[in-house]
Image (cartoon, rainbow, N blue to C red; front, side):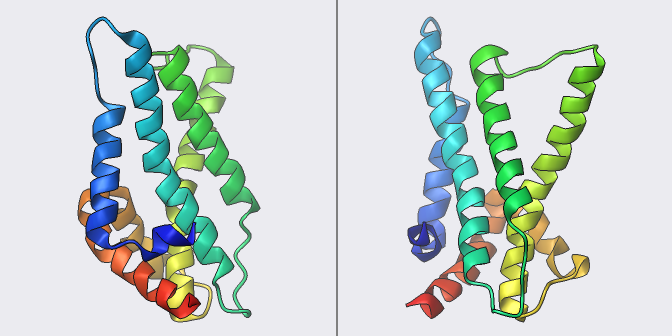
Length: 165
């Protein structure tokens, strides 16, 4: 996973761009290929966030502790939910029941935490103390809008990777 920290911003951009295209690819008449490409694209896209969240947490200064258990659980919830939606619900989910509502509410919480955690870990690493909400709020939006944000986030990850060696 350290490799993801060492890749340049343009390399990550190309990988995530290909993943985005794969997740939206449609070949009329070949549903199996569409599902496989959709799953691979979605997983590639999500793995970047998951990997940097875990990797940066491992590189935090000793006085900073960010619990990563909830991030790991929510990461699996988000990834498994996207995979389930792609495989069984053709990308959309409809439910009028209470269980569906509870799942959607928790999924939205897990999705936001999935993007907030790497931003907080990145800022905590740079500040060498636990980052406050105002410190990492901007990076949250940079991670959320990856085509733009990758050009600012990845060079900062490269600096952290340089300190690893």
